Length: 263
Image (tube, rainbow, N blue to C red; front, side, top):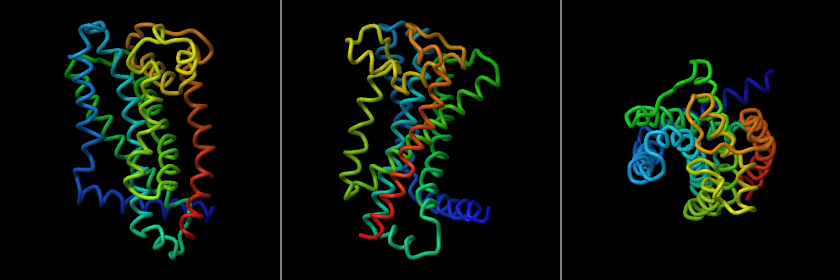
C-alpha cells in the first residue's frame, strides 16, 4: 500500500506540473478544442448534406469524439519527447520518485485535457443538432468509455514519445499511425463501401467499436451497422481492447523510460 500511495503522490505532482505548463501556454489547448470543433463544422455542414443531413450529424458526433481522444495522444507523445530532449527526464531520474509516476503523471494530465475537449465538442454538437437520446446512466457510460480509450491511447503516445529522438520526430511519428487507424473505421463513414481487407481491419478496429458503442449509449442512429462479434459486443470489446492496450504499452513505456533516462 505504501508503494501505491507513493506512485499516486508522485503522479499527482507530475500532473500538477504538466497542468501548470498548460496554464502558462494556453495555446497548447488549441488542438484539443479548436481543431475538433473545426472537424465537426466541416464534416457536418460541408459534407453532411450529401452524406445524410441531420441523421448524419448525429451519427458523426460519436466518431468525432473517438477521433479526438485518439489524436490527443499526440499531447503525450510530444510532451514525453520534449521532457526527454530538455533533460527533464534526467532530473526526474535523480529524484527519489517512482518511474511509473512520471509517465502516469503525463497520461493523467492529458486525460484531464481530454475531459475539456469532450466538453467543448459536446457543446458544439448540441449547437448543430446532436442530442443525447439515451438515459443519463448510458450517457455517463459513453463518456467513461471515451476517457478509458483516451487513457489507453496515451500510453501508446508515451511509448512513441520516448522512442523519438526529438520533438520534431515525435510530431511526425505521433500522427503517422493515428490518421490511418482513425479513418479506416466507422467513425465517419459506413464500412459497406470499404474493400475486403480494409473492411476486415475496420470491423475489429477499436475506434469502430468505441464509436458504435457510444452511438448506442447516446441513442444516436448508426447509419449502416456492421455484423460480427465485435459489432454485436461493441462496448465489451472496446473495454477489453483498452485493457489490452494498457497492459501491452504500459510496461513497454516504463521499460523505455528506464533506458532513456540512463542514456
